[in-house]
Structure formats: structure tokens, C-alpha cells
Length: 222
Image (cartoon, rainbow, N blue to C red; front, top):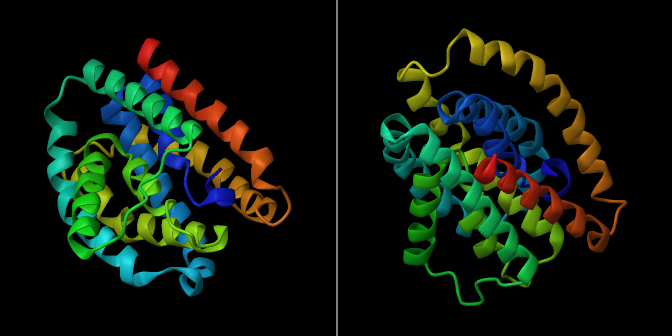
């Protein structure tokens, strides 16, 4: 999903990993994977991204991410896991409904959406939902949408791993799990990127929505 559409890593992995290991272990693993995937995809997306819109979003998100991380450190793990699952379910249903923000993109609104995304990134590992609903509203072609999302995620990827690292959440078990999971992701991302040029979006979207709803339901009710 990430290689194909430019998003999907966090909204699938955050609820699943939180269910398996709890948010304080699952979210750092997902953040590290997000960082490495962003490095993999960014060079090919830079030329197509709209930096005027994306960089204010990413800057505001980067500043708000540490505050969101405070929630990750202090919130009850079970409650946070269920919030992650419910949030992914709502996001998946919104995508299925076809709803998007249809207004203009002035700088104050860019900063507000970026701040909201940063708070979510730090606390749940998921910055994508508000930004995806916001950016996918435009009339740009799919290639521009995908590049914008890749650039946004890359701008906050480094900042997002700093609070868990300083807070001691990135320990040996996290690194061992990362070592097992990362090669699978590294192989899958370029396959998804190649499929972007082959598979029509009308075939991809139902599959992606089913995966989102399934992951959210597992974390919420599991």
C-alpha cells in the first residue's frame, strides 16, 4: 500500500502492532519502519511534490510531534490501543464514503492540519488520516497526490523517532522485531511502487479499504 499510494504504513501497522505488543512497543517499531520507507521513496517523489503546500504541513507536524509523544508516554496502553483501532475504522469509513475537504489551502489551515497530524504522529504513530483527507481533495493527478504524501511523511519521519528514542522505548526487543520486519517492508515497497503504474486505482481501493477496516477492527475489538 505504501509503495502504491504513498500512504498506508502507519494506518495498517499501528493498530496491528499495538494489538500484538502494546502501543509503547508497537508504535516505535512502526515509526522506525516509516523512517526507512520514507528514505526509500523520497528521491523519486521530490520532483512531483507541491512543496508550497507540503512543507508548511510537515513543519507544523514536526513541531507538534513531541507533544503528541507525551500522550504516548502517559496514556493508558489499553485505552490508547482502542483509540488507535477506532480512529483507523473511522478513517477507513470516511475514505469509503468519498468525503474529502473541498475548500482552498491557505497557510493557516495548512498549519492547523499539520499540527493535528503531528499530535497524532507522536501519540499513535499515525499522522496520515487528516493530511490524506486534506490533500486528496484537490484536482491534481494521482502522481502529484502520491508525491505530496511521500514528501510530507518524510519531513516528519526523523522527528517522530526522537521522543521514543530519548524516552527509552526503542530497546533491544524493538530493534530485534524491526530487524525481522524491515526486510519484508523493503521488498514490498518497490513492488507497490511498480504496481502503481500497472494496476488501476479502481481495483486497488476496495482492497485497501478492506485492509484498513480489518486492522482497525482488530485493535478496537481484539
